[in-house]
Image (cartoon, rainbow over all chains, first blue to last red; front, side, top):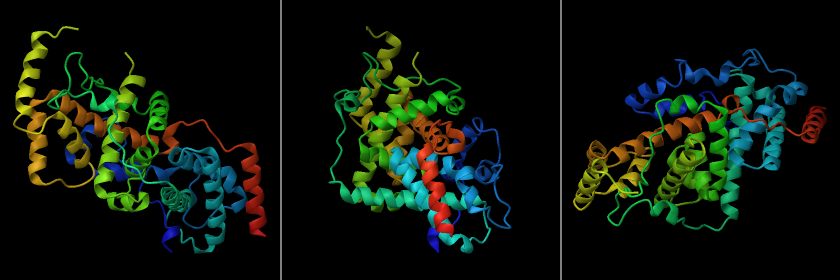
Length: 237
Length: 103
C-alpha cells in the first residue's frame, strides 16, 4: 500500500540529486559527508530491519522528531501534534505490514509525509484561490527597463564565501523560519512542498489546486522574498 | 548616495542590453523557473548569456541555489535545531491513544 512506504531517500539527498553537476560540486564544500543520501536512515535508534520496536516506546523514540517534521511544514503546533498522533495510530494499525525495508523512523516518516501532503490538499480546498501579485517591495527593486536599481543599489548583496556553511547554523534556521512566516500562505506552501519535500512540480500544482503558470509565479515570488528577507535578517552587516 | 564610475558603466551597459534582451527582472523569473522544470533552449541561453554579463543576476542565481540548500537543511528535524517538543499534554494523549489502540 502506497501510503505506508518508506522515506528511503533523505530530503538533502533528493535535492542534491536534482542539482546539475556544477551545483553539486559547489555544495559538496558545505556538506563534507559523501553519503548525504543515507543520513536519515542512519539515526542511532534506527531499528534493525528485523522488526519494529514496542509501539509503547514510539512516542519516546520518535514523538518529537515526527512533531518537528510536521511543524516545520504545516507551521502550526496543534496541527503538527494531530499529524504526529494520526501517524503513530496509522502505523500501529499497519505494523504487521512493515516489511523491514527501511528503518522504523524512515517508515514512520513516510506515513507522516503522506499525511502532511493530505493536509496541504485539504487546506487548498478550503481556501479561495487568489493570484499573488508581486509587492512593491520586490517589484521596486528593478528600474523602468527591468534592471536591478543601482542608486541606491537594490540588487542582491554578496553573501560571503561561507554562506553555505553558515546555513547549517541555528541562526539561519531561525531566520528562515521567520521569513517563511512573513510569506503569503500559498507562497510558503509552494516553497515548502517544492524545496523541503522535494515534491515534483506537477504534483504540487494538483495538491494546491493552482495552474502551472500560477505555480511558477508563487515560487518565484517566494524565492525572491525569502532571499531578500534572509539578506536583511540573517546576514545583517 | 552617488554612484562611482565603477558602478555607472556596468549599469549603463545593462540598461542598454535590457532594450535588446530580457532584463534582470525577467531573468530572475526564468532562473526560478529553471529550478523546477526544463526551460526551452532559447530561454536557457538567455539566462546563460545574461548572467555572463550581469554580476547581480549571477549572484541572484547562486543565492537561489543556496536557498534551496538551506531549505533542505531546515527541512530535516535532525539538522534543524528546533527547540519545540511535543507538549506534555500531547505526549500523554499520544501515549494513551497508542495504548488504547494496541489493546
